[in-house]
Image (tube, rainbow over all chains, first blue to last red; front, side):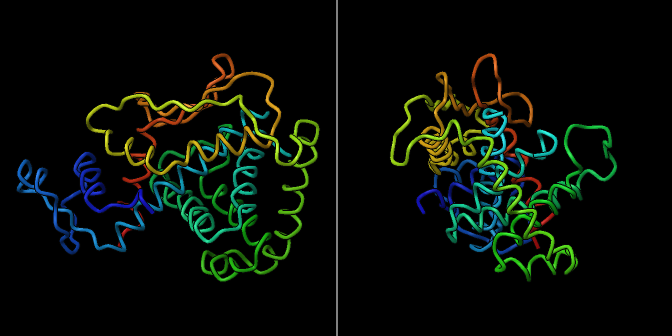
Length: 72
Length: 201
């Protein structure tokens, strides 16, 4: 699945201010590590995958829900 | 069909169940869990007079249709406290929801294999703090997927735009005047926050 990429979830995490979580550390891509050396993505691969699935699953449900309003 | 908000929740669930793929099932499980997670975040702000049912009710209704359509969700339903006698009635509720939508849309369904050309997809630029959410959404292709499914399934009377944008609020909506369906990047960011705060262990 090309939408799943740990470095991207790291950047999302930075954007949301969610990175200082008490989980295992995952390497950070160089550019962002340089800019934010004090931040780490502390998600396991499984947690990052679950986060992606949760965001996209809820988004997909929302898209169908609003499409229903379009049909009504 | 019930009230409009309930009916379109049912449409979302029935549509996702109809795909019947492992990935779509996983998306639907996550969406269903999302209602319970949102409920946990908003217990102090319950609005009983709103257009929508309470989040937890929406979660159980989604779960009911899931288990009514496919017994693979039985264990999940039991784990979430859906009683066995309720599970039994969910089979009827799923069939009723699916048949109702099929009946009310029968006159606007395209012939099998016909392609639509009424829905266009637009991604608006995102502010820096939502850029990664926006990029991920675009890369997922979900907006094109739903737009294409609606376009190819239904004979739509006018041009429509499915748009992803920053709205300044956590929302998604159908705008009948502009004929736009808008998904706000802020709502996706909320989903991420809810996951981390309520579901991550």
